[in-house]
Image 1 (cartoon, rainbow, N blue to C red):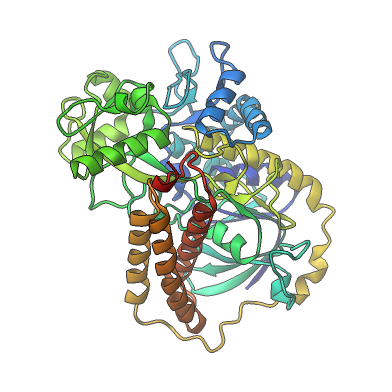
Image 2 (cartoon, rainbow, N blue to C red):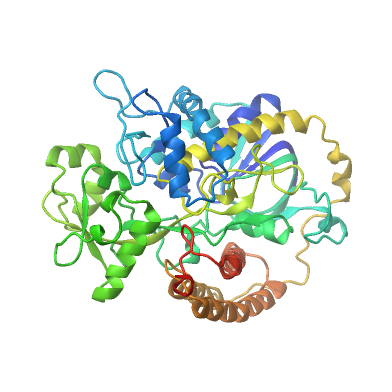
Length: 521
């Protein structure tokens, strides 16, 4: 099938939905969601969204905290723009029907998280992302110009390459005409043509064995831009959340929000002793890269799989009412967090780099925008400050929408649509050995977890690169003869993302932010 729309959105998290709502008054919008519309990283964001809301805080403080966390390589202009826009974007979320917790007097109830000097995290209990997703999805369903299609897996960006032109990373004016997408219900590959395309495809956490990201986070947007020869940046900066619930049987790993440490929970070793004083004066509220490395080191020194997070000092009522999702989840596993310490370990959590975009969300490919975790804006630098991600997503969705509204009316590329072929699967056969995909995925995740994790070395990176080359060749051979399926396409994307992480890590010759090599100490 062939479809033509004005605005095509790939992804149904906070970035994609916010963008869709803002461009919908100006044209026909189609949102493609890889799985169910609500099933993305936004839904799993527990902590909240950072913004300066009252005069007890200031933009300058939030800017300074972001720059410190980013370890000196943030784009200061981007940081200032994003943080100063935050209050307006928060009010828009409220207008869309999102509910943030408030105090009895009507002011927003604000949390504090690691790296923040003030209480500035707006939240909805400990399931803020789910509340944002609910409010935005309701607004989407109510809008007559927006069509939301679930179980649609975007495979490749359509460029001049698909019309027979040779495209390299040096080709000027690479143009996006839409995407090819697999309808996971019919196994047919459809052609979506659009004047404007936004990638809001989320992260790549499933490159690693243990991750807090949903299973659909396989780096699809980044991999598509890589194949389309677009510009990518800072992919070596993979943030590991210090505190995921230790429960090896569960994927994704359940997140224990940083807001719990902001409320007073303390990290302790297996003997019940505090240890963060050995690593940073901010103790358990140090930025995530520092805390994750500290826990990783303590795990290796002790030869154990998890440490403790002690939340018992917070108070029973505050724990149950403020963190009901975590309380209920732990109780299911026989852990009463009002009496027991919580077993935790780091898990891959957030991709700070991605598709390089300008301040309007424009990628290096014409008519292609990116927002949210798949993008690299310059806000995070070497390490994301807690709860700045939802803020970045909504700010850049707004900026991209404003720019796209201005640009799409001038777009006459639809004159070329008849030259764009549909997907050709002639001669392909079904792969009947799923083990070729599942085992390769496990191998890839083990390689990345063991060699390209929280702490790295030149030798580990080279070993990872060498082993990845074999996996790449085997998978490309399988891809070139097989009918395309979602698992096979996801595997190709994960391999592409792993390659990019390794290559950019090998090129980074200093320890900065989330990239930490023992050879660079």
